[in-house]
Amino acid sequence: MRAPSRTLIAAALASIALASPARANGRFPATNQLVLAPTDPSKMLLRTTFGVLVSRDAGKTWDWICEKAIGYGGQTEDPSFGITASTSIVGGTFEGLVVSAAPDVGCNWTFVGGDLAGKVVVDVVVRPDAPHTALALTNKYTMVNDAGDPLYASQVFASTDDGAHWAALGTPIDPTAVLETIEVAASDPHRLYVSGFSGTGANLKGVLYVSTDDGTTWAPEVVPLDTSTENAPYIAAVDPTNADRVYVRTNGKNASRLLVTSDAGKSFTSVFTGAQLAGFALSPDGSKVYVGGPKDGLNVASTSDFKFARVSTIAVQCLRATGATLYACSNEVSGFVLGASTDDGKSFSPILHLTSIRGTLACSASSPTSACAADWPALEDTLGFPPPDAGSDAGSGGGGSTKSCSCGVSGNDAGALSAIAAAVAAIAAAIRRRRR
Image (cartoon, rainbow, N blue to C red; front, side, top):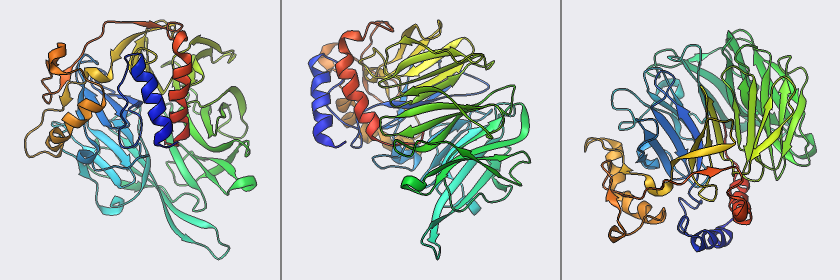
């Protein structure tokens, strides 16, 4: 969806005093991935359509890192991020694998060289059972074979020292497949799952590649796709206690399903159908599953029966469960761009509004992130900050003004704005991006 539709949406939002009618890199400002440090959940990273936001105090304050500081860009690129036990950040981009290591996390960014130099990194994951270890999945077009089929170079790389050093893990994966996501099993240190697809049109085939020996061998299992509406499978999670149970989301045009396998991909059951399932979360003990999207609201079920109940009408753009807290990315129509719930999603407390970002992350003048300061005033205006005489304060991070909001939102509070929420959701649904 191009600018005219976005302009109409922005005008609607402005009419109710929400965000201003501006776009980030051609896209409406939005949040779409939340990552928590495994050893210190007060350290948080939030991926947005205009760069990355980081918090070091459990979401009380947020600072901005621009795309160019990290080393990626483009209207539809949403890198996959992970945080290791040392709080180093690992990012998979179309330009390569990038790492921001402790102690200056978020300030300095370095692309990994060697065999990873210039590789397209489609996904990264940090092992929950061994958080000093991170895995990166590469998938890059190489050539067309004699039959006219495109071929890809695909490989898993691993680091056991918080992203400092990387090496290929196992053997290359099926060269005929476009790969999308990688996931690990916390209960089996040798189990790896990779999702992808091959073919086009009626010949499109979803695939789950399963390895039980650290990537030495890969067994392909078919992920059943409705080729009339779905175009790719994404691994959502692996059950924390059962390595054979895997949750997979399908992606498609106005159609998306949640599939579950309990036998490592040999068979799948569809347990939920929605318009665009942008968010998924599994409770830490694996007993509850949360799923939702911009048009689907938030839905919760026990994993014993998968009987879903819609508990909220918020426009879901990402979900993350940790401890007793469920986090959700949304938009200001829902009352927040990041919120937290302690009652299984029935109500959310706002953690972040776009207008409460402090500014650029404070770094030394020589760091790549310091260059973001020059772009902050324009972004500040884009995000709809009030003028200085409206009572806003300077942010300590990068000189940006702030605007606070003490409002809360329940699942039904946004009902009167559902038409606008649906319009905003249409923008997100029109842009295909990698999701976790």
